[in-house]
Image 1: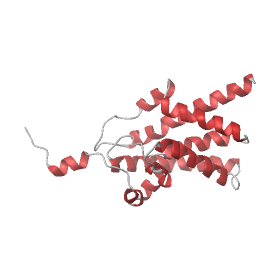
Image 2 (image 1 turned 135 degrees about the vertical axis):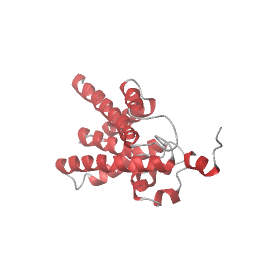
Image 3 (image 1 turned 60 degrees about the vertical axis):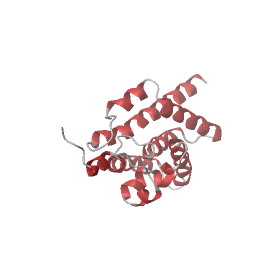
Image 4 (image 1 turned 90 degrees about the horizontal axis):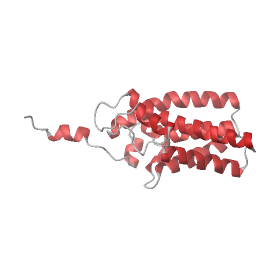
Length: 184
């Protein structure tokens, strides 16, 4: 029987995201949504709100092609940032990582705009529902690429999984909005 050394135990113990952790690595800044993920209450909702505000600011200067490039680059950089940050936090899908919400909600807004405030609120509410409740396909996507364990061994599959389930939540949101527009 081998004893676990204190150093080994600290390697696998989950870490808490703090302001110091945020600024310790560029990947942390991105994955934690430039600080939105540090919210002690509902970091995913705060990250989605940050995505909404930043979309409205960026949309003044970006056309459809530039948004497409930003979303593609954001997915690639986000995959790296989420993987690195999850490894450093020793958790496969830490709640403080909100880049997945940012990217997915940017995609939702990019595809539903122009929409008035009510349309944007509906998109926000639907996306938060699908992301938090994880019904059907979102639950499948959430479990597909992630190992539900802490510690070393968090790899690119888990980083992709962090982004993937929010992408599916975004697709579900867009499907409901498309059906609503078709029926009405």
